[in-house]
Image (tube, rainbow, N blue to C red):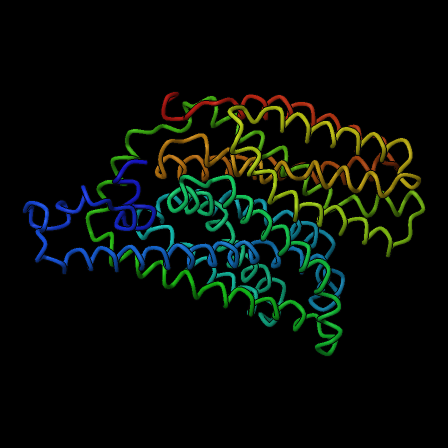
Length: 445
């Protein structure tokens, strides 16, 4: 990784300093003699501080990941109560389910520029603060317009943090991209599952008000702000005012849209997001229409989401050890095709098996995050690749759930929607193989 990338996007290079490097930190004099112990002690202290800061970054990654989905899944759990409380029409409620992907695409584009100006740590810190404010304000905003605006604020914080998490991992843990992506992905899956499972019980325990049930998740977001305040302050102290020039140089020499790998990764990300949103939005209804009870259908969805917790930790570690991640994309796609076949042929009889297969298939998300970190040689490249991949990908994912709902409504059954889902899995496998090739976007641009 280039030094200017580290200065701009990650920790100060101080913790990695070796004895041979030390004169560069001083006045250019020769190595200190036996009587000059103070510089040595200074560098030891700096190394210890850098080690502590890395642990703070790890805590920040986990806490941030835990907060990247509860604002969405908690709302899904209480959507009926929200609609009744705000007098929200079905059309507006349908729009609300599409807003996350739109916000992720729109606000994610701004993440690289913000990161170059303020540093990823400061932007993620602001993102966590935006989630906190948006989540706590929206239940009490006084109407549908205020609810949507506050939701947009929270989603903006989620969007920029989504883009910058792979950047933070690449900057701070360049030699451990797989394990750290796995830890982050596991925490994200855990936050998704916990919000879906606990929102209703917590709402009941706190008096039964949907407003309280939604606002309580702001507490977790507020806790996530704290480690990123430390990281942002350290970056300002270590990087200084010269980092903007380094970032600008990286910006002008890399044209992400000319990279075939970047496009393959963006389409792969978009198709896996489409499958995930369709699964979260429609899988329980498929089971209920097949005769499965509402309670069991909800548990089946929880099982699908929970599969991502252990697999999201293991899969990136495995992917990082492979030169070509295409075989993993094929395996996950085949699990998805098998799950769709089961939903078509015997949705109720094999419901638990299909839920497990869909849960495995949904782990294309951590695979995509891992490949984002591996397809660039620098943190500046990862910034651009992450923003491009996620912005384009989330735009691709917007029509999927709406199209499935339209086909279901007009056909009166699940045959055509499931055929669409299976059909989209085929190009996902193809572009996953292309994105998994051992290439770097800098070589292609």
